Length: 326
Image (cartoon, rainbow, N blue to C red; front, side):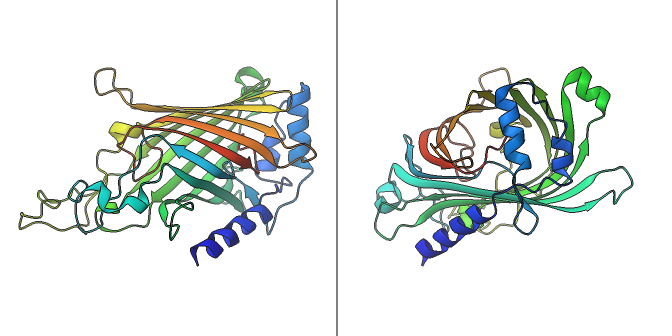
């Protein structure tokens, strides 16, 4: 059943990947410079597509049949803390190789609702890690990320002077839909600036994590009277120590190749410094204008919510269906 659900989501993903650029992000993207062959090609790709029920591709959409994780992710039994049961108790969840995929869509909801010439958007991103190559093919982890945001086109002067194309102000929830000791979630307000310098696209994002109630002392100790796997407190109170307070995304176009780099750091310049780096390579498949070979290399913290506090090194290869420039 999981296989058919995953395939249905994948097909719906492909159906909904095209851009609708008649207004909203299309208008803001009309500020895109197209002085080079690479940027001119991207602009034509965007403006030649039409949305599915008004949906647009948001973050990068991809399907990776091969995702190798050097650091085998340990399973966390939902009723007991991590490490209580030997990892070998669940060998079927310990495969280094799995399928990784993501679909990400947004939809314009309104324009100028607040009187600031802003665009209101709703977006949804889902990323899954599927242990498809072992018996029963369980999903190791799925992260769900709905968000709502306001999009403000930059002024012509800021565009010309500093390359700023637009601002994005939003609220984002992210969780993994689990319970007990597997549960992870957090809520953030964020502010993003989108920039372009010739063939280089840059997104600068800062966020603020909304505070939550701390869990009771001893909630994860089976010998404590406060032991409660489903304590309603913060599931990952220290997540900012690992994922920091923002990120930088670089996208560089060279001929028909796109090179991506994500940089994240907690800005603690001591022994507690932690961060993440993600490098991506996209190249159109011969004869296709909307499907790309895609290779991604990740090193650091925050590869997934369940692994937010574990250092992970992984490489994934497969196909992308949208560029994710902005």
